[in-house]
Amino acid sequence: MTEVLTANEHGLARAAQLLRDGALVAFGTETVYGLGGDATNAAAVAAIFQAKGRPRFNPLIAHYPEADEALSHVVADDRAVRVARTFWPGPLTLVLPRRADCPVALLAGAGLDTLAVRVPGHPVALSLLRMAATPIAAPSANRSGAVSPTTARHVLDGLSGRIAAVLDSGACAVGVESTVLDLTGEQPVLLRPGGVALEALEALIGPVQRGLPPAVAGEGLKSPGLLASHYAPGLPVRLNAVSVDEDEALLAFGPPLPEARCQFQLSAAGNTAEAASRLFDGLRWLDAEGARVGARRIAVMPIPEFGLGLAIADRLRRAAAPRG
Ligand code: AMP
Ligand code: MG
Image 1 (cartoon, rainbow, N blue to C red):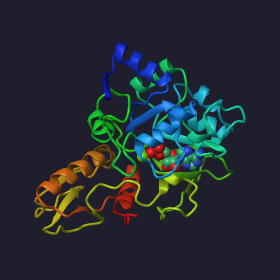
Image 2: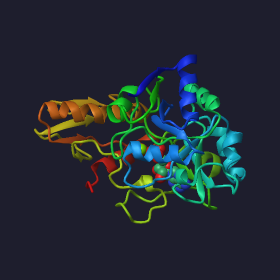
Image 3: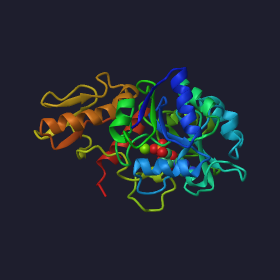
Image 4: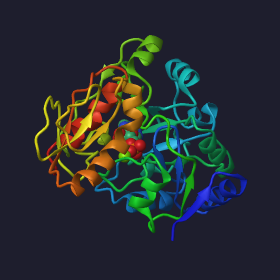
């Protein structure tokens, strides 16, 4: 049985205790719900992969309540300190070289000599991290390959009975994952677009190289999260739809297509931040509702690739990639 904990003093204390005991607790952040386990406890980290049913050991992000603590586990140069001061707490993950004395389990970083660290920007998550008093490894709290959860209900849909508890802190504000920035080399590299816009990073540290485009599995990717069909709803996805077929459900952006009989509006105003906050809800809703009305595909209207649109396009391209 998965406990559903309320985000009050009692619920937080219980969640922190479970984490310290090596159990798994899903918790809300400003991006999506994370599936948390003690990052210094390899068994807890292994349990994360198990609960998610991940086909491989993708490196996980270690979460901290304070920037100083996060940066003490990695080799942080001036750039990293500047970026951390500006964007933490917030939806940004930094990949940096691990320090030799870093207590995070190697499995959490999939054996890499780098570590992804983040201070999330959600008060409940920060309280939990402080009370747990250990870094928490937390990938998105969904079964591998499924859509990322933005509510406690979504978490339970995928993981009920597979994790000890979920700490319910309401719906996530950003709705897409954190931006992953690799600062291990001289040239900063964007490994995953996300909640912090690329433009904002470049304004602070200059040009950032775009990471590898979504590629097929097993091509020796620097960031395994770039796997082609990582974010797949149940129905196949067709991108850049300017019209909708009879057997399609529609993910709309901006002025909707009148002929769609089943549609979810990401942002009528064409606002990419609003669209990002509704993206995973939309895919889930279309999966269920589309199946109910007999749709065989989700058609997605074009979304401009700037700001959070870049993150949305990245997610959707993967949702549309051939399933393997
Ligand atoms: P998730 O676990 O769903 O939040 O995804 C974590 C993302 O961070 C994935 O895209 C991972 O591949 C990426 N990531 C985590 N650690 C590293 C690392 N050490 N090097 C490169 N990418 C990483
Ligand atoms: Mg994920």
